[in-house]
Length: 170
Ligand code: HEC
Ligand code: HEC
Ligand code: HEC
Ligand code: HEC
Ligand code: HEC
Image (cartoon, rainbow, N blue to C red; front, side):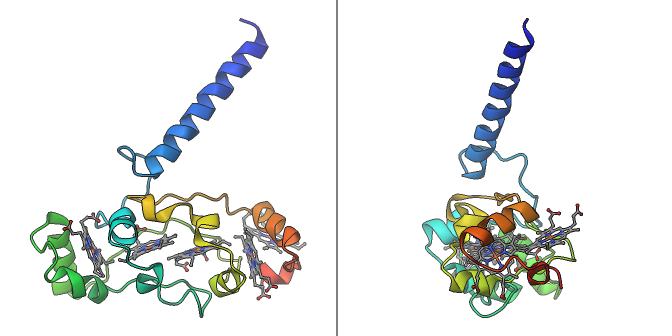
């Protein structure tokens, strides 16, 4: 086989792979590469079907660098009565009864030497989906943006945001 057609076949295989990953991320099939979580929490159900606002659970993205994560108490407000006998909700009740925080695994994480600020982006109308994908359609989340320096700087250039080193490295 000619080297060129091998390369073409390889490209097709890689492209198919990413399409499958995207489809899986959208909740269309069993997800194998998503971060496993201590409780199988689905954004598709909460943010999608039940239309619970992102800000209801991620309370500080408008005012702080950190977007915020929901407390166990916030989950319990609904799940004392909503499907209390569901096996995953039984797990939730165990965390609540033993006063333990739910150890959610991080999906997106920058190295410690990079500073990121949710408030600054949200104020300038950069939608969650630009960096996190169609969250309300996903069961388990995956990282959808590369989160590399080149990716950050490319958008900063195009939107005339600061590209000074000290903006992101403090
Ligand atoms: C505002 C109410 C509300 C809050 C807050 C809430 N849920 Fe839910 N949750 C629901 C509803 C409604 C359903 C769908 C119930 C059904 O299928 O009848 C659901 C379904 C679920 C399910 C089963 C389907 C799925 O998503 O896997 C789990 C597990 C779950 N919730 C976990 C959580 C956790 C963990 C939290 C806190 C981070 C939380 N919920 C916060 C209302 C809520
Ligand atoms: C009912 C509460 C709830 C709602 C509503 C909700 N989330 Fe979440 N979110 C969670 C929980 C719990 C986690 C941790 C588990 C996980 O990653 O799925 C999480 C994790 C995330 C993460 C990954 C954080 C990381 O570690 O990188 C992103 C991004 C996110 N949510 C975005 C959104 C967006 C965008 C919306 C609105 C479309 C939204 N969430 C609505 C509860 C919620
Ligand atoms: C410009 C890109 C960008 C936008 C827009 C964005 N995020 Fe994020 N988000 C990130 C990055 C990068 C991280 C990881 C931050 C870190 O590790 O310090 C993150 C982390 C998170 C986390 C984990 C907690 C935290 O703050 O570290 C949640 C939850 C989250 N985002 C939700 C949201 C929601 C909800 C929106 C829309 C209101 C949103 N994000 C908009 C890039 C973005
Ligand atoms: C889709 C476009 C886009 C992407 C991607 C993006 N940013 Fe931004 N960023 C902006 C805009 C727009 C602003 C607001 C500029 C202003 O305040 O004038 C901003 C502001 C900031 C600020 C606040 C600057 C200040 O003066 O307080 C920091 C810090 C920052 N971005 C870091 C990052 C990092 C780190 C990444 C990559 C992980 C990133 N950004 C990715 C568009 C983006
Ligand atoms: C808009 C945000 C942003 C700006 C501006 C920025 N960086 Fe970064 N930088 C990042 C992010 C995000 C990473 C981590 C991801 C990566 O390594 O691509 C990083 C990583 C780095 C690294 C580590 C690379 C490695 O391979 O480990 C160095 C060194 C660095 N930046 C230097 C700089 C210098 C010098 C400037 C100014 C000319 C600068 N950065 C401006 C976001 C930024």
